[in-house]
Amino acid sequence: MTATTTTTRKVLLSGSRPTGRQHLGNYVGALAQWLELQDECECFFMIADWHALTNAYNDTSALPENIKNQVMDWLAVGLDPKKATIFVQSAVKEHAELALLLGMFTPLGLAERCTSWKDLVIEQGIEEMRTYGFLGYPVLQSADILIYRAEIVPVGKDQVEHIEKAVDIAEKVNSRYGEVFTIPKWRLSKSPVLLGNDGRKMSKSWNNTIQLSDSSDAMWEKMRVMVTDPARVRKTDPGDPEKCSVWAYHKVFTPAARHEEIVANCTSAGWGCMQCKKVLFEAVDGHFAPARERRADLEARPDAWKEIIFEGNRAARARARETMTVVREKLHLYQSNGWD
Ligand code: SF4
Image: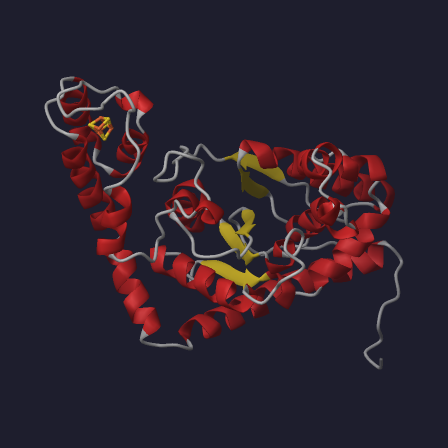
């Protein structure tokens, strides 16, 4: 028996850990591409709650709220449960079963050859991270991908190594037991980097993010204090957009027809940074107006997101079970006769 997929569209798996409200960096780095991909591929979008525990196992109390907020943010920006399967990882227990089996095929060296393991555990010596779960998270990630027979996994450059591990493990199993897994391919996301409003890397822990759920007023309050080209001390000083994080946002959100005007006014000191930020704010605020409407509609129906996730979990589980039936059969594992 081999696993079969009825769809003609390529299967795609992506996801993220529920660590808090989604922000503009998450939108540009992943969600904007997912919105296009959900029309092109058969998409599985996963709330990776088990992965959230790899570095936050000491306090999981925020998980339920984070999961809800992440689902709401995804739906608000336009992820469509009619087009894509949106689900919670821990609701599909087969991920854990497959991760356990893949672990048997994973040499320790392969697991240890992981940038975040080397960085946090070996170089920085963070003892809290020296756990079996953190060492094994690339194996769980491999299970996440292989269990849906995903052909495409969109990733940033730093994630490519994980997909390569999934390929290594899948090929090892296939070489011994026949065609068990579909071999996935990574697709590099060409996402621009947006800095936080303090000019540092955007991070929830630094409180420098602009969140998708922010009101118009809250967005403007965060944008008006954005760090700009440090050489523009006075309004009369000409600026260099390439040294300014506001310009990076303009390139994403402001219509291209206005880019020349922005550069000209910056480099000639034709306008001040506050005026430039107002142009940006109008573009961003307009971009997310439909998301605000969708969010208001979802908030008026408090159980709507749970129903969507319930259906997504059910669909994901069905696909995962198909794969696990094949895996158990190919690996000569115990097959339940339905009596136990
Ligand atoms: S005018 Fe705009 S692009 Fe130029 S430094 Fe100010 S905020 Fe940045």
